[in-house]
Image (tube, rainbow, N blue to C red; front, side, top):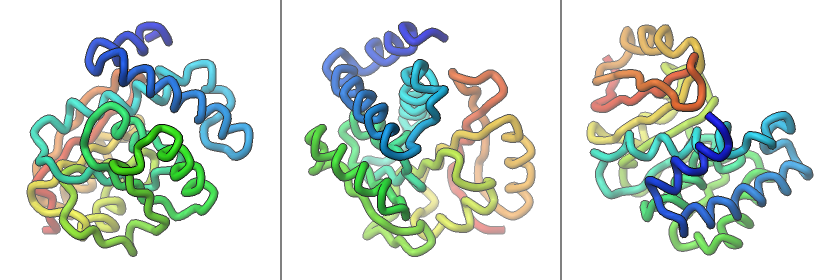
Length: 207
């Protein structure tokens, strides 16, 4: 997929006004990457495909989730969490332990006028307890699936939808997780990488 087609995919589904704000975020992401390693320099020419569309494609997978918060774990550069906030009206909680990333996320939320929608929490997910269970949980390149579920299950209930982008080992991670966890797991194909998938899970609980 080209940068133009990635951008058009977002316009077609979310409209021009949200795409315009997403373009502002892309500029902030590139500028911030000059100060700290938010995204790899090699991916900057492909920021719409590799990062923005890669994040935006998660939103339709949450169509059946409740109206509560979307928690993004290890939020880093705001991928996918900040993209979710820009393209939807859902409250988003960005959980990130590293102070420089937290500062970037808070400054970005302020610049994009997302302060009422986005809550940036400096914490490891193991230490964070939301006031109510998350409706959606996402995590991009944080941990192996079983470990991720273990560290985060206290933030969820049986109605939570987990949406977890994974690499080429996605099916083996799901197979391993099923030995320790009950729930409905399936893998969606990624729009941005043929050898990657997105784990969508519901009803997750320990065996």
